[in-house]
Length: 497
Image (cartoon, rainbow, N blue to C red; front, top):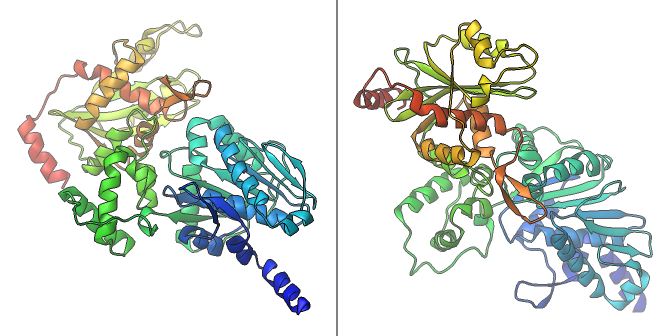
C-alpha cells in the first residue's frame, strides 16, 4: 500500500503540468491565498511555448505570474539550473520576487526539506540542489539557462540603453536550446520589442520552421479573456463602436457577444486613448495606439483612422516645397510637400547620413518637380569654419535658394506641428520612414524623477520630426498659388478615392 502511494506520488511529481496546477500557492487579486491553476492564457502559452518566446498581451492575463512559477518549478526539480527575471523597475522586480518567495514558502514541508534555501534575500533564491532564481533590472554578466524579461516594451521606451544592454548582453549569453520569455504590452512603433514582434510575426506568417534561436510570437487579446464581459442590459453601444466591432469580427473570424461588447465600451470610458494599448484586439492595433510620451502619437492615429495616410496625388501644376533638418555630423532629412488650399500633401520623405550637402542638392535636382520654397532651420545661415560659407550660400552656388525659417523654441514648434497635422495627408509608401519618425517622436524619460521630461529624446525619429517642425514654422512663408480650395476638393475626390 505504501509502495503504491509512493509510486503514485513519484509519478505525479514527475509531471511538470501537474506540479504547476497542484503545488504552488499565490495571492489572488482579492488578496486571498489560493492554489495556482493555469488560466486560459497560461495554459495556451504552456502548450505552445518554444525556446524563445515573444509575448504581446492584454492586461491581467497572468503571464508574469506563470513564468515566475514555471522558473521556480524548473529550479526545484532540476539541479544546477540558473534562472533570471528582469523587470523594468526595481519595485516591479521586488514584486515578482515576493511571488516566487511566497510560492516557495507555501510548499509542503517535505519538499522544502529536500530543496532547502541556502541564500535568501530580496533578489535571489539559492536552492540546495545548486539551482538559483534571481530577479533584478539587469542580468549583466550572468550565466542563465532561463530568462524572463517583463514589460520589455516599457524598458525599450523609457530606458533604451538598458534595452540595448539586455539584447546585446543577456540575450546573447543564452545558448541555443535554453529558454527565454519576453512579454509586454505595446509601447509604440519603435525599439527592440516592436521590431522583434514584427520579425516574429513575419516568421510565423511565412510558415518557416523555427530554429532554437528564432522567437515564437504569442498574442493574447482582450476578447479571448473569459472574464472580460459584463451584463449588457443597461449598456448602450455607441454607433462608432458598432462599426469597430463588426470590422473586428471579420479580422478575428469570430463573433463578439453582447456582454463582451458592453465590457469593452465601459472599460474604454476609463482607459481613453490607452484602451487599444492596454487591451488590444490585434497586434497591429496594440502598437498603433500607444501614445505614452509621444508628441504626435494621437495625431498620427487620427490620420490613419481618417484615411489621410494613403496614396497621395501629385499635381504637376502646383509647386513642390521642401522642409529640411540639416545635419552636420548627423542625418539630414527632407519632406517634399504641396500646399493644396488648407491641406498639406506630403509627397515624399528622404533621409540619409554621412553625405555632404551637395548630395542632397543633387537629390532634389533628380526629381521631376517644379519647386517653390526650400525651408531650412535658422542655423543654415551660420558660416562653417571649414569653408567660410554658410549652407545657404553653398546651396545658392548650386542653384538652390534656401528660405531660413524663424528661430522659435522647440516646444513652441512642437505645439505648432500638432495644430497643423490635422491638415496633412501623407503618401503611405513614399513617406513611410517619415511617418514612423513622427509617430515615434517622444519626450525623454527622466529616470531620476520617474517622469517624462519637457524635452524630446534624440533618437532615430528626431531628424524627420525636426524637418517637419521646419515645415510647420515656415508654412507662413509660402504663397499658395494655383488651384482654389474648391478645385482642390474636386481633385482630392478624384485622386484620393
